[in-house]
Length: 482
Image (cartoon, rainbow, N blue to C red; front, side, top):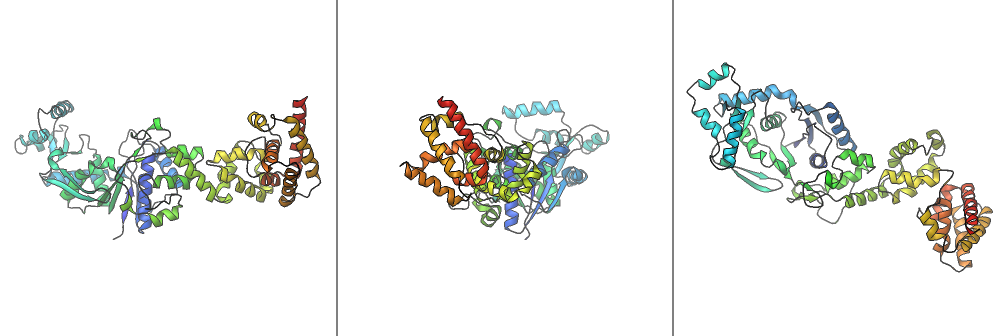
């Protein structure tokens, strides 16, 4: 059997973290089993559905490297089919016309809520009409909905995440399948679309659990093959409550804008409610496909941990190549006016080497932008905290040390092993640890108290720029001492 699944977002806003995780699980499932992923846009909410939301959703799916095999299809294109399905159920005696007014419906809901009456008030009202009266009222244009008869008994299915699920039908009110304005309701439309598109597996959030028995009943009434259902756990914030803006960003686009790597985001989303069964956490998309099993999806809700996302992003920076990172980084560097693209292209190999030494210290693309500043700017500022910590304890000693090293470095060929030996030899000469020599020098050439390895920094800055910055540090310290 070819496994056919669908991701069916509503284009009423940006792609939410929970929806993205659902899309990912569907994608992993199909890629693991050589299946088909259908993208269906459920746009029947005419007031809130926007074209720009559709474009945004598809952009974010592509950013996450989630591709689809069919679609996008639009639910609104199937409205005539949905209406026909409702009328077929009506003709088969499996649905009925409900002439309850909105005011009466509100009163009935309140009565059910307070326990004054049971379910199926609308059914009893419909059954009280004389034979042919409902059809006559409909022909006369009296507004009405079409409701599905919920049969007696229970609805049972084997959920591939939760196991056996049992719903008592008596707890399900007769559901509206066609509204008074002729528009189909969600449960009819989605069931019709899934059947029409031969969806074999429905993998979605467990907030849809209560919809599933209703949809199974419609499948049975229409004589359609029932798909296999799997309901994945909800994503909660750190306080154990449903993920919302109070926990931070909830739209995937915000993480793209923050510079999280897409592979890291995909890896993180996969671990929200699933694990490969060992301690492995850092995985590429190909590894996720190879390891994914829907049976290993957890039943319980998962916690969105921003610190874990940052850590994973850092791990993916480590394994990314400079070529993987340069496009987005270059765009940000140009936008920040730190580089001229033509000038950068002239020293492209140097640029890729720079990315290679910076990437292990980054968790987001803006981190790389900041880390690259000392290498791209002619003039740097000395961080006050770095000056206080590494210069001000003994500024005269630091000044003398920088003067000596500046003089020795000037006469060297600019090769890492050469100037590394020079600096190490000087530390031995004055009987101090290498760090006591390197840290003041680091501040001098980068303006900061942390950077990649100082010898890589020297090499990529180049001899001329290193000497110029040492001169500036000497001047700064001299004025400080005076």
